[in-house]
Image 1 (cartoon, rainbow, N blue to C red):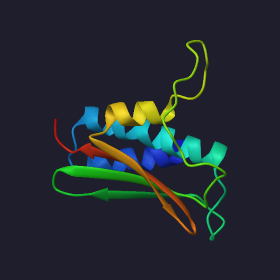
Image 2 (image 1 turned 90 degrees about the vertical axis):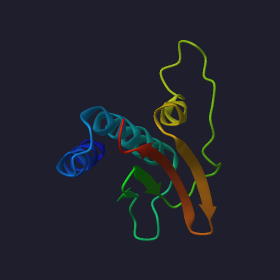
Image 3 (image 1 turned 30 degrees about the vertical axis):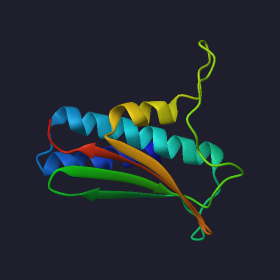
Amino acid sequence: MVREARRRVAAELAGRGVPREVVEDARVVVSELLGNALRHARPGRSGEIELRLTVDEDRIRLAVVDGGSATLPTLRTPPELSTTGRGLSIVRTLTCEWGVREAETGNTVYGVLRAER
């Protein structure tokens, strides 16, 4: 699922003429957002976790909608040798804006990239 989502997002952005380095950042953001949702969240009402891509003139918004989890996604500072726990820190580093919206039906975690470098 994550691999296919990365491929589709990259193809869509490349087809719109988005610079290669922005496409690569978007692929990483997709990996982190979807990976976190698959590990920590429940599926939404449709039984799925949804990836939404919105491309405007100068911004790319990637959002993952899920059925929620026991706790809201938050930035963590994992131990130095830990192999997990850095996903949202990576998203924060690569995006110009990110956040979590909580709703009765679940959570939306998103990141916004500038379309041009």
